[in-house]
Length: 332
Image (cartoon, rainbow, N blue to C red):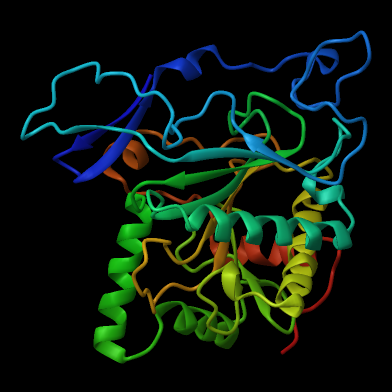
């Protein structure tokens, strides 16, 4: 059962999805549901032996596709506590048939092809009348809470704009009202000007540890020019994004010679049919490690008050990542 419940205190929707309690949890390699099915072996989601990419609907979705059967709400709705069906789409994106591979290990050319897949799904899902926001992300590593190790990402097509994005949009609007400029374009200009937090750069993208980083090794990748969403991409934007994405991923893995766990999330324009001039495409990485052996836990202050405490200086962490291989000094 899946439904949306309104939080009147924070004024945001949350989703209950009780059926996800039964989803696959860290299966051994021989029983991975995302590996190709072997004749006479464990039946999986993938019938072909080899593939470039596979996109399919999540078997344990948090959101129910429009037109599918909907259960009655588990509680009665009220004026204070509205309950609605959690309409939307949840998709899985497989990068490779190789169970041991990671996104970092994909060739740059294949990452570019993956970006085309992401762009296609953003446009296609965004056309659905019930979808207001297409959220593309990847969870990597048991420290993040992944339940299947096979390399894959996910896409949630929400029937509402998620609360963090709403807050971001409010900031965009306030900044434009005050300055007549894009907030994110100003952030890019400021990071280039100060340069101490820059991790990598190319003609069309900038990767940096933000001035306001919440995680020690948090990195944001921004389009340097104003690009609202992947729908605005051309071939050059895709190729340059693949290049800087590969660079950042390699720096993460080479920092301590381990496969860095992370959350990778993409922010871009909503698909609600309205104009969003302040939206600016960017990717955010949240690695949970603060040292090679220590995790950054979201404890009382972060979870209860919403105030992050970063035990490090973004300038120091940016330097560590900048000098990690591939070691290229940023240039304009």
